[in-house]
Amino acid sequence: MPPSDLEPAENGVAAGVQSVDRAATVLQILAREGQAGVSEIAAEMGIHKSTASRLLGALVSRELVQQDRDRGRYQLGFGILRLAAAIPGRLNLVQEAGPFLRELAASAEETVNLAVLRSGYAVNVDQARGPSSLGTQDWVGSLTPLHATASGKVLLAALTAEERGALLQGTRLPRFTSRTLTSRVRLEEELLQVAHAGVATVREEYEIGLVSAAVPVRDHRGVVIAGISVSGPEFRFDPEDAQVLPQLMDAGLAVSRRMGYSPT
Image (cartoon, rainbow, N blue to C red; front, side):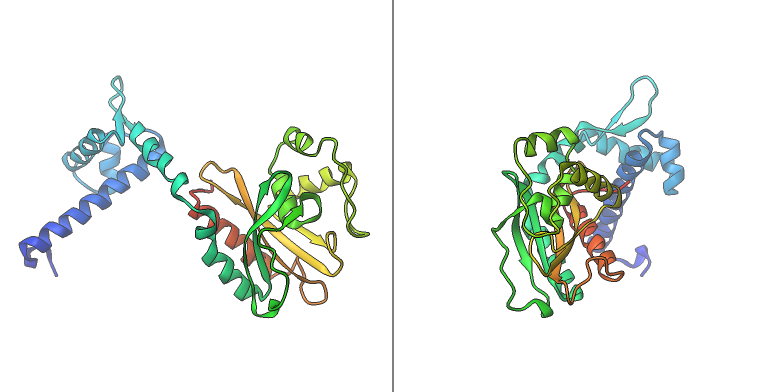
């Protein structure tokens, strides 16, 4: 239906939606470019300079955009920071991750856990079970060792060497199975690989017969705040499965986006 055929109220709503869409586009351009002039913004959006100027004026009045007095170019304003600062406190990691954990558990058909770093342990804060994992252990609330679990290694790999040293200082790496890494040197070597690959895998390092893979979850700053893992029995599940790993990495990125992360 062409705009001329709209009722006045409908016409107003359509114009309002268009204005919001255009204002959002201006913000996206400035976020991408850092600074831009009226002519550049108008040209990219395919609108008149006068329209772009009105949009910028409205955004400046809300402090979402500010103008460089010397050059006359525009950039994002401090109002954006105030809005962004309010987001993390309102995001609940467990709530945001839940649907993705359940979806991953259903597709991988194994147990999926969400873990965070607390007091030197990987603490499981949520769990979803796939159809093949019925009757397995409930890990929610469990404190698991950082050096012997996939999520733990993801969380450790995100720390600096100094932070890891302070966390593990004076603490021996206990052996749980014959495959547990108890050498700090070998652990550091593996954590470098985990940080580079963005995924950690363990094979029977915490429990005989238990294998798992984990990826990080990042917040709006890009800081790793959690790990998502898929685990299952060694006879049935391969933590390096070519189908499961991409699904796991997609889930980690999806939850990270929900927490405000924007990959470059």
